[in-house]
Amino acid sequence: MLFQICYYVPFDHHETLKSALFRAGAGMADGYQECCWSTPGETQFRPMSGSHPAKGQAEHLSIIKEYKVEMICQEQYLNEVLKTLLSAHPYEQPAYHIFAHYSPPAHPLKEHT
Image (tube, rainbow, N blue to C red; front, top):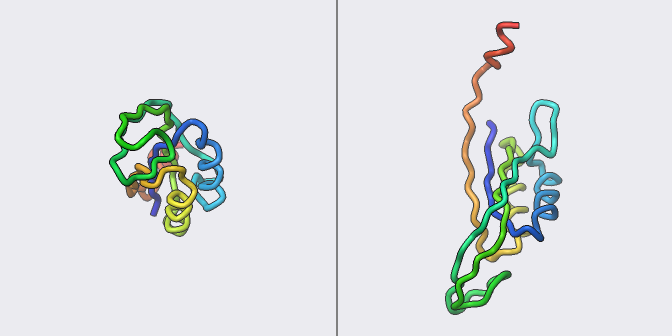
């Protein structure tokens, strides 16, 4: 089964985290590797008292430039990739989500060639 992992990361950690996830097995499919999609944007958060933010200050609103990164991951690598995401990400609570992909039995365009 194939999964899609989406996460948000500050600009200055984008390449480091992406490379770590590729080494853990993410971004591979059908003869390709290191595949992903990155979109720049902004995140907003206010760290509460007692938090230890990697960016910003507790009790102050922060707006940080980040990338939203999407990459595929085969099921056999998913646990290791998730462990890597949580340990290598600079935030104490990174935002991410994982979707299962439906894979049809055959590529519809390849059947007609």
